[in-house]
Structure formats: structure tokens, C-alpha cells
Length: 440
Ligand code: ATP
Ligand code: MG
Image 1: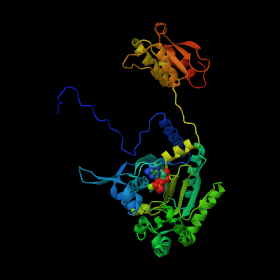
Image 2: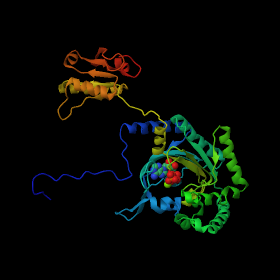
Image 3: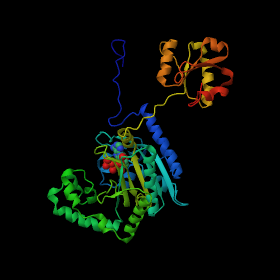
């Protein structure tokens, strides 16, 4: 449609979806740094990267996580594919997808697999500090191993990550959910106990009383704390094998000097857990204090239709880990190029670009002064930009220099002002002098 006057109507500015954040420089550098630390650490523990789709069949989560869970009841972004009517969901977590992939590609045919992933997850929650609708998780999963040794390994892996990141304000809470039969016995007694105190149950608890009573123990409602504290403890229902597994995990953590507390009320939000469950918690992020959580899920693969195999894993919330680092006053990385190219005359650009290509190929990071709407700007304004970039060197591609087949390298930091001419034809010979720790 055309407007009456010739001017096009001003478009309404579009904004990001509520609870879904842009991650921009310089903050994105922190994300990259954390991701690099994780990649390097995972390699040392021989965990391999896995990448699964962000969209999965809705049924995967309904079957995998359990129908009576926060996620499936109210947090999933589910939709029907208009083209073919498929029921799909933006992944609210990645374990179900990883398990689907492992089973679909028969990855356990030659033994257990250790995997890790990083990526965005989606939950329709009330956005607040540490709680978003698109958030990011890093997760480790060890599939095909049944013993407490792998539980300990994967917990130690998380502890090593905190150490490398310099994260100190955390504590480890540990529990065992036992096996389904032990849970059934406990469940019956728990329901009986809660029914005796029905007047103290909130609406959520009443709804879950017969569908998922264990989750009631996980309540964040302060009015119910006394009630859940007095409830029968699942730990007291564990048989010999479950206890031996739990004691095994604890002994291995102790042997590694990892402090933990047993929290008999730790149940986790997903139905798929059994035996070991754990959370890394901090007091410095308010009620969003769980930075990493996980446990054993020996029945999940079978539950989604695969060949049953034991497994254990955890997922950390990147936003919360970064927030905690910030709380601790960790310095944010401030990336700066090694050099900034000053270009007085646009005619020099072809030569400038060629030189910068050679420098970058030699490992130097260089920021080029590019043309703005008003052209290249004065030398003075270019030097100001060079300073602002944090670069240690300015490369001045002036007319005199180019006529002589050279560039001036000027120091912007230590001994600012010191300068030297370098030949354009032999970049490799002097490129390394621009790197951190070298003299110009
Ligand atoms: P919470 O009890 O805080 O809702 P959860 O039990 O739902 O957490 P998990 O599903 O176990 O969380 O996810 C593992 C980790 O992912 C959490 O410990 C947390 O650090 C992070 N996380 C979960 N949901 C969100 C969210 N909406 N926004 C940011 N981080 C999240
Ligand atoms: Mg949650």
C-alpha cells in the first residue's frame, strides 16, 4: 500500500522476545572465554562434543522428563509445524535429545560414551535475574557406565571447571533417589504422611500429591518447609545395592578432597533420575542459586524407546555461572587487537588490505580503520580510534611510507610514540614484533 504523502511510514522498532537476551561485545568475550575453558577441560577428561537439534518432537520431552514436571506442565515452547502437523518443541534441556541421538545412532554398540554439549535452551518462565526464557547450558553426559566411579568422575569434572574458572563460592549437595522399587515404597509412606497434613499443603502440592509427591519435597514455598522437613526420607528406604553405590560416590569424592553435604530433600525437577543426584549451589545469586545440577538416569534411554543403558550427567547454567563470577569480582576479558591500521588516503586501501591480510595470516590481530559515512576522517580522529581500540601499535599507511614501500609502526602503549619503518614486501619478517610481549 502507498502512503498519501511520499514519505514511507516510520517502521515500529522491533525488539527481542521478552526473556531472550542478546549477548553483545564486550560481554560475549566472557562467554567465549568460558566456552574455551570448557572445551579444553572436556578434552582432558575425554568427553566429546555432541550437537543435537534445537527442535525435537514434543513426545520426547513428555516421555523423557515426565508429564507432571514444571517443564512439561508449563514451561515448554511447543507448536505444531504448519506444514505437516508435527508436534514440536524448542528443547527445554538437552539430555533427552542427547539420549535420543545416542539411541538413534546406536552409539553404545562398542561401549560407553562420554559426551558434552553447549547451547541455548528454552523455557517459558517468569524472567528475572538468573532465569530467562532462552538461556544457555553446558552439559556433560556419560552413557553406558553403571558404577559410582563415573558419577564421581563427572562431579570431579565440574569441580575442576570451577577451579579453572576461579569460582569459589559454591557447595555441593548430594542425594540418592535409589531405584524405582525403593521409591515406590517411600512414595506410599510419603503420600500417607502428606495426606495426614493435607491442611498444610499448598495448591501445587495438592495437585502433585498423587501424581508426583516426591517433587513436593522440592517446594520453594517457605510455608511448607517444616512439613517437608518432617517427611519420610527416601534415603531411609534404600536397599543394600543403592547404598553401596551412594557410599562409593561419597568415598571417591572424599578421596579427592571434595566437600559435600547430603541433602535428603534434593529430588531434582525431572522424573528421569535415579540413584545419585547432585546440585552445585551458591548463596550469592538469591533464589536462582543452583549453578549446575545433575544425576544418574539409568532408565531414560529405555523410557524413550531405546535399548536400556545406564547413564549419568549434569548441566550448568551459563548465565548463572557468569553472574557468579561477576559477583566474585572476576575481571572480564577486554579483547584488543595487536595493531590498528591508520589510513590517511582511501587510495591506499588496496595496499593496506593486502598488508593486513599478510599480518593476520602471520597471527597478528589487526583492526582496520574503515570509511564512515563522512569518509576516513582526519589522522587525529583515526589515532583517537586507534587508542580507543586498545591496540598496542598503530600502523600508519601514509603517502611517504607507501611511496617507499613501507609502513610506520608506532607504539601506542609502552614507550608511546616510538616508531619504526617496516617493509611492506616482507611482512613475515616483522609481524611477530607486533604480538603481545614483543617490542616494536
Ligand atoms: P530451577 O530450580 O532454578 O528452576 P531447574 O531444576 O529447573 O532449576 P535444570 O533443569 O536442572 O534446572 O537445569 C540445570 C541448570 O540450568 C540449572 O541449575 C540452572 O543453572 C540452569 N537453568 C535452568 N533453568 C534456567 C532458566 N530459566 N534460566 C537460566 N538458567 C536456567
Ligand atoms: Mg526450573
